[in-house]
Structure formats: structure tokens, C-alpha cells
Length: 397
Image 1 (cartoon, rainbow, N blue to C red):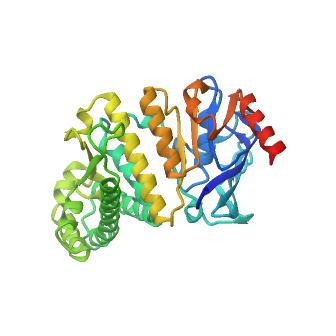
Image 2 (image 1 turned 180 degrees about the vertical axis):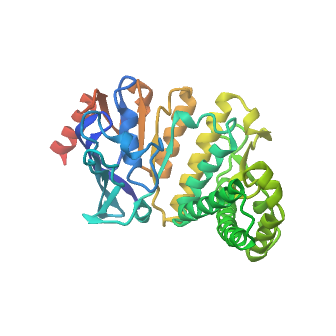
Image 3 (image 1 turned 90 degrees about the horizontal axis):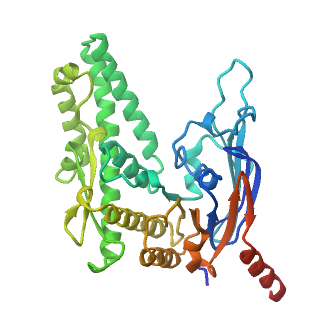
């Protein structure tokens, strides 16, 4: 019994990265992609991630996604089944005429043009974990903010819009410092907008952290858990104020604070306080240790536990439908016990997970619950054993 489910049943790539043309037909089960480094495994995950709001798991410029020597155009199209209903989603970019800048990204939903990628979030949710995220706890606060904001956007589709509005107003305020402008009217208007959007951004982050903390508490296991539970906190003036005061009062206080610190910010050449300076603090719960002080293996396990908690929270918020999980090179640095524990968690979650690795044997525990494909130089082939199982099901079904 599969229960309520979201799964990708057909993926078509055209001139995307190293794929001239490729089609992948899938079942509700998880998908394992194996092949040599550079074969194009991660490119497939990136293609799937482009069918969700935002710029995908690499955050690449759209012009970079086109296959070399293909004229600059690319497309990704997919058919999903969600709770029994079929939806077709597509995205891509047209080739630009010589001497012209590339066009913007195009999005289609059931063949009809959509106004932007934000609309995709109404239909599917996609979460991912890539090797580049392994340094999340030891890297810059900006990386953790981006990580948190992706989680927030999975619950609040307007979050990215507010982030863009805040950034635009802040850049304009900073530009006034550069030009020597001192108009009270100009500054007050921008600071009012920054206070309004900035407080809303911080409030959405606080709500998401609280939501995740609740899910973590509900699913919390003992100190011997292979994926330790995390303690989460937000560091930042606006975020802390929202814990003590109503949002409307925090918004007014933030506007006054921006006005009071103009000369300090003018000397610095930038705005020094606000949600753009916040940080997500993560502690290893069982060891009561900051995440950045944990071993590399502990950090990996902590990060996987956090992704799984996010997936559970999304599932709870979407009526029991789990998101797609894109797990790039997920098994490379996990021992056998942790690999098997991860596979069991995916099965319990009821998610269609897309997993990549250079060695298909590390995914052997999934041989009866996943479908296997080999990736080689922009081509996709099913594993013989997987094809045999499909043929057997057809003969007996």
C-alpha cells in the first residue's frame, strides 16, 4: 500500500548539460543512478530540481544549463503523479538571436505558460542534499541562511519574493550612502520597506525553525541513533525580538533602528543589522555540541537527519504527501549501517528518492525497492537485473 504519494513518472531532457536528448521512465519506487564521475548523474538531479521553484540544486545561471554547441536553448519536461492526479511541468530557455541577451526562463504547467517558477511549488516539493552542502556547519553564515530559506520557501511560497524585495531596498539604501545622499524622505521610504519585508522574512524563518523543532522532537530517538537529532536556533536581532514582541512592534522598532544607525552604516558602506545577517545555529542534540565542532562523519549524519526532518515536516504540511528527495553521492562517505538506516528512513517516509553514486553495489539493500539506471556520457540505460524484474512483473501481472 503506497498511500498518498508524489512521484515522477517520466523525465525528458533536451540539450540540458551533457544530454542532447534523454528520456527516463520511472515507477513510484526510488531511483538509483550509477556511473563514473562526470557521466552526468548529478545533471539529472539538477534537471529534476529545475522543476521546483528557484534555480536548482547548483544555483547555476540559466545560460550555463544549455549543452555546449546547442545554440543556448535547453528544456526539461516531466510528468508527475500526485495522489493519483497527473500533472505535466516543463521549464527551459529559448536560444537568443545573435547579439541579444538570453531570454528569461520559461515555465509551463500542463502546457500553459506560468508567470514564473514560484508557481511550481503549488504542485511539487523537491528537497536535495549534495556534497557541496557537507561544509554547511563550518562554512559562512550566508550558506546556512540560503539553506534555511529553501526550507522556509517549501512552506511559504511568498518567501522568495520578500527576500528579493528586501535585498532590492537594502541595495538602494546602500547606494544612497555611496552617493552621499542624506534625504530623510528617501531613507525613510526605503527603511520602511526594509522593516516590513525584513520582519516578515524573520518571522517566516522563526516559524519554520519552530516547525522543524516540533518534528524533530516528535521523531527524536536515543543517543545511539545513526542520524542524531538536532537542536536549532536563530541568531539575529530581528529574530530574537520576534520571540519577545508582536511582529508589528518589531517592524516599528526595526525601522527606528535603521534610522538611528544610518551614520554607522554609512561609514561601513553597508547595512549592518537585519535578516541578511542572521545565522542558523545547529547543535548535535545527543552530544550537546555545536555542529561546527563535530567530526566530519557526525556533521554528515546531522545534516541527513535535518533533511529527513524537513521532509517529514513537508509531508505533514501537505496532507501526508512526501516530497521528492534528490540525494547526490549520498552513500559515498556513509558506513554500511548508516546507508541501510538511510534507506529504511526513505522507505518509512514514503518518498521517491533519487540517489546517485559511482558504485551501484552500495545501493544493494534497495534492489527490491528501487529501480536502477546506468549513466554513461549523456545516455541512460536500465540495469539488467532491474529490467529483468520489470519483465517478470509484466509476465505475472
